Image (cartoon, rainbow, N blue to C red; front, side, top):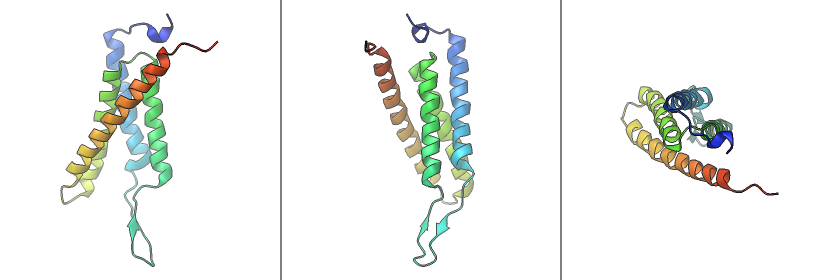
Length: 137
């Protein structure tokens, strides 16, 4: 039995969940939460943004590393997925609520919640399947 298969105590789950939550919120604020400026093309007057591709990719890669790392160190999938989904959604919503006067941030928050819940579940299932695969000799 490898160290990743050893059942972890409840305290590990709590601390792991808190770690995932903090790192997930930090990923939002570090990669994207600070950028609120839209770019307007001077010719077409079409606006884009506020995020650049590199920010979204960096944030996604960070979340992926945090989740897979948590799973491989023994944090249960349900704990890690819930912690990431709720913390990231809360961070996103807190930022969006301050800049949205029309209340559409609620719709965006629900979409972030659903999207991240789905993505974390898929990553957890794939990670578990890869972990259980017999090693090639």
